[in-house]
Amino acid sequence: MNVLFIYPVNPPELFTIQFSQGIGFLSAALKKAGHKTDLLLLYDVNKKDIAKKIAGFRPDLIAISSVTDQIELSKDIIKHIHEKYKLPIILGGVHPTVKPEECIRIPHLIGICIGEADEALPEFVDLLERKKDYTKTMNFWFKKDKKIIRNQVRPLIQNLDKLPFPDRNIFNKYLKYDGEFEFIGSRGCPFQCTYCINSFMMNLYKGKGKYVRYRSVDNLLKEIEEVRKNNKITSVMLDDDTFILNKEWLREFADKYPRYIRIPFVCNARADRLDEETAKLLKKAGCFEVKVGVESGNDSIRSKILKRPMTNRQIRDAFKVIKKYEMKATSFNMIGMPYETEKEIWDTIKLNRDIKPYRMGVSVFRPYPGTDSYRLCKEKGWVSNRKVRSYFDEVTVLDQPSIPKEKLRYYYRIFRISAWHPIIAPFFRLIARVKISKDKSFYDIVLSMKSYVSSKLTRKQRTFLMKYIKWF
Image (cartoon, rainbow, N blue to C red; front, side, top):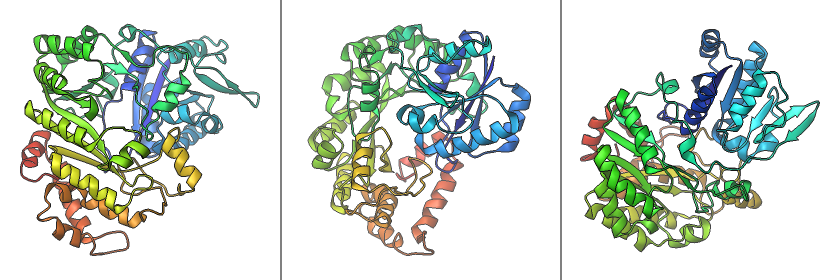
């Protein structure tokens, strides 16, 4: 069968297209089962691109992967493809997993897929191709004769080494590789932060096998080696949520990676797990940058609201030990969390001043369905009907009493400059208050110029400018 994956993504001004591990693994699983796959990325219902892809590939099935931010776009795509081409369509991804009752009722779908689909999708496609009864396929919900068939999820795959390496070829048209390639060595996360769907996934798969699973070090290195054969790799991004969690695995990785791969890499780490030995192992392996979720600079917000029981001191110590071993340290931050006030936002800005990250990410808090924070915000009546285009948007969906949405947008704009350049920050805070229209300030002109210049630069040029103009 010919299966066309459609991947609705954020608007280009908010999103740099990245390789999707999920679609990559599923495409590889289908190809291993003897099927053909292709990919179409859509920012909107681009009828011309859809027509061209369908005419050229002639798919037998459309498989759409959607997160919450893109579910409305996904619905529009489904409607258009059904009306124009009458092709069977299934929907998978994060949003159908956490909101199956909503998604199964989307018109024109034959079914939705929930959870990990490495085994479920090939089974379904095989049955569909052979015109057999596919309605008992685990992980799938179907609509049949005005009834909904709700199948259970199957046990989690425990041996990740048996999975084929993710298919990167279908992304070649869309990705402009700048030497960095993304890999992942594990699945699952043992922590239960309130803004993440991890708690939901743990409950979904309760009794279905070990939730946190690792590929063998050798299996991961083999994939990197295969990708290197056909590509020039200058850096590796290891996208695991908790790359440093399993210290025994990390010790083996630190021993083998520099012997067989020897490509500088970036990874994610939790501050409360980043001790001296871990930093030393990362440096030994060849790590040059560690990304750390700070999220809030206020201990109470972080522990009580986000359920991230770590202290500012632990965060400071983590950044110190990263720098001690001459690695770059990046911080991820959020503003606009439940009950957060201007004071707590300044706590986060001040903490970033102390830890002096090499790079700094800041986003407006978004309560996603399936998370504890979403349930809290819904119970409080704070979730508005405002449309947010992506997690990277400066608009909040919350109307909470602790901070107005306009004030939150202001802090989003001045966060980095206030943390990195406190001496000149007052000037930028001033021009951020000077309105040139209802929704724009003079500072927006400066930001748009910065974004335009940054978009024209290569990764190397941006890195060079980072030394002098941090907010690039």
